[in-house]
Image (cartoon, rainbow over all chains, first blue to last red; front, side, top):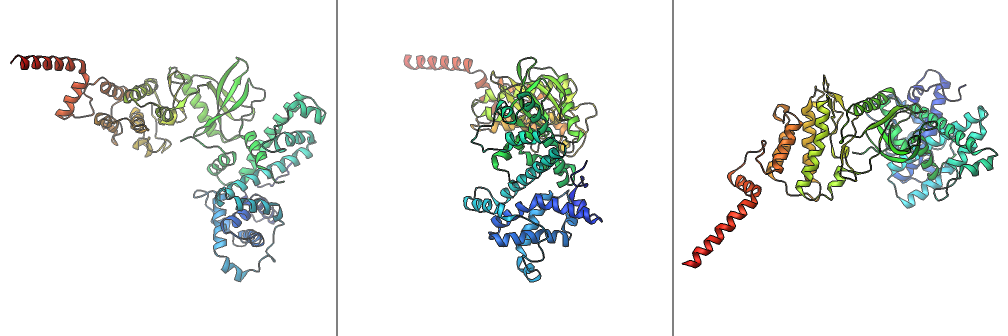
Length: 242
Length: 300
């Protein structure tokens, strides 16, 4: 039973596969992980307005495919995340040249992306300015990876008939903000018509499954073991002491 | 789905936390992270005590970090010394991550602790206590290879513990780690990936001594101590102290007011040291001479 792309090794390799379907799946996953970070980065770093940043984001992924930018990616020199951010810098810097070649917002919309969903957050952040564009890019990347993992976990639970497991996971780990105390297991048991012991076991299993999915996804988004390890530490917010 | 910041934090915690389901341990909270592992406080429900769990930080990681962590546990288990944290348990968690459980020591990192140790002598006594477990490990055929302030902890009762033996290697045939240590504390031969011996740790201790003398509020740094640190950190290992006891003995000589091997004294420096060392006798003689002088003066 496989619901994820077959290219578990690396999306970078899959993006250059001779098989069109494999390439399309890889692009879709890569875009899902990176379009929000790229969009917010273009807005914050280059100060572009919504429409312009949305067009540039579409253009970024179109050029990634057309120009085969990933062929030049060297995992021994940089993380994929950093490489893509630098490419975005280059795209913005060369925008005037790109304008001459490309009619923006037209045929280059190769992906269906809901920019309105992320627009407000980017604007709020631009007003607050708490993080640098680079740090906000990383934060959005972390959010995208976890969001994708949650969706994959939900699909897995539905396919395996474990809807209760996802519902408990969602109620305990996803709902509410930091100010709201997390629900007690007894309360969840009453809400979902089960026992506290079952809640304990379901949540432990959910975390184990979710952890596996997050790391599998990260494997796809990285190229080497060293990059995987670095990105896993960044994703999980592990700061080694010096 | 767009996750909020609070959900993101909870998911990070959920992935990072060790899977302790079905084990004797219950998670209390994170304590810190090192080069290859994260350390958590946990309750050992079987024995009713708190322990520290060191766990490979990235779940389902490759085998190399897991083997390194278990090797560290084996090294520590072989070395029983008051300056080393005892290991209670080791193995794999349900999520596949390697771990070991050790005594929970809540204290301060050495560099933080030195912030409220202003006296030079106290700092040097702490340094000598760092040397003890390292020398003990050497006597048992183990090199630490990553000695630095963040790997030394001072406990609430003044106990000094040398932590993080993740880079430790058997002395016999210890190949270089190819720069696996920490720049500034790593012997040059180690950085070059050459075979290393106990003198690599002598270098690390020299760098540690040097760092200990610089942490604010830094006490005055006598030339003799600077010479000891410089000799321990000589780029040519043949010019360093031959082993840790030799380094510790020179520091102890300084503490006792004796001449240290690493330093050539000038006549004034020597006189100053002798006066300092025998200050009571010198004081009595000076008082006697002064009294005698005044007596003679007033008599005439």
